[in-house]
Image (cartoon, rainbow, N blue to C red; front, side, top):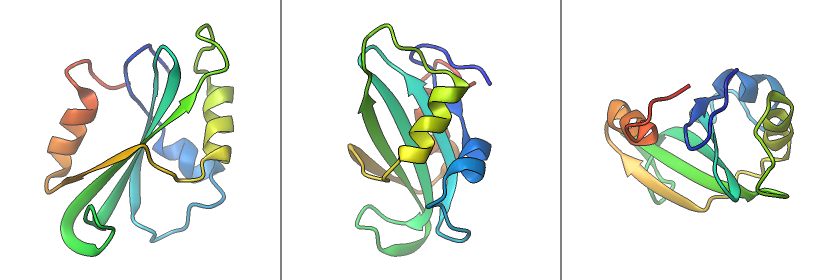
Length: 115
């Protein structure tokens, strides 16, 4: 698994393997992580819910959270990613509603590509 500065890496399989609070059928379909200057960013994609967390078919909710790094020199490794997954309390810094999964993924990409 490859982590690069300011570029999201899909970590969906890691979440499925290491997140004990993740339940089958809860709506989460994709997960991403990104290394930034001061923070680690986690994105969760929830299918079938709108921005009010009401069930709505055909919607996707992007949940984004940031976890402050211990120091600016701290990198994102596989070990650190698993640690963040195990500690994820599913709180959010912000959310955004989408009606098209491809558009959501394009926004996550941000023109920098995805790992």
